[in-house]
Length: 364
Image 1 (cartoon, rainbow, N blue to C red):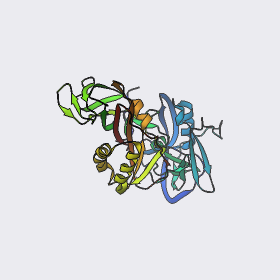
Image 2 (image 1 turned 90 degrees about the vertical axis):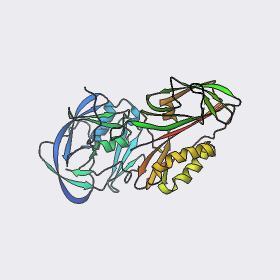
Image 3 (image 1 turned 120 degrees about the vertical axis):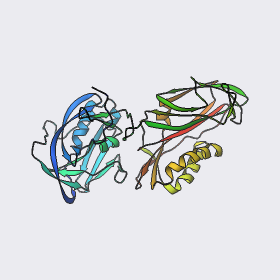
Image 4 (image 1 turned 60 degrees about the vertical axis):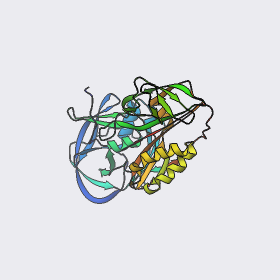
């Protein structure tokens, strides 16, 4: 199959009887959409409403369990009729359809569709108002959602091939929803040896470097002073840190983190980054760069992607440092606050030759 461009109009499902929020009537046209799940092509029944295709949520759960290459995306479903709550439980193994053996189809006749007021919880957290769930529709007793929305909730990525009219769902995110690569913004590396030391720094990055300063040239060779001052061997000039940016892949995990008002972002970052082990100079450098992207948002969902980041951007530093702190923030703008499990951090102690790095990315 040809490389698929990002889907701007893919959509998804839910599959239990649910309430209709309004009696605003839409016309739903039955479709059979080609959807490729981590390389496996399937035909899925759904409905087209106003140019978007919607599917039953239970059908998506079955497809993910059958074809997703990463089990972490598997999810279970539960509908509580009394409270009108749809619960998505991630990490519970493969989905078992209570209607196993029965074939669902949308037929050929157009149907009436009504907005639903069902509430979606993911592992107990209310996802309504986060921007990750658009409207769902009740059609013939089932609730249907856009594929992109539910894929986002289970940390999968959706792409669309206009030429072939094919939707692809991927375990490994490739890009932002607008088609641009995920940008690792301004990771900077501070070096603090105990004495004047020649240091080699190489970056094994699963992506494309777009900017480096000083020039990377297959690695940085510098003389580092205990106060962090660096002299670059290639040009003989002095630098405060090593800087790079790149386009790459990052599986962002927002299951833990913080929801912070835009106007409170500076104070939050000052305290949190200090608690994580950054010095005032380091966290002030961080805040000066990131605050303009965050302070005007109503709220920010913030999570620090330590393991995910370090797997994608490995550092080889010689001589080997005695202590390393790498801080990588992912954030998403929110219109309304949501509940999220607070993130916890291990205390960081600076012993011997210390390396500190910070960077971040905005998730659309």
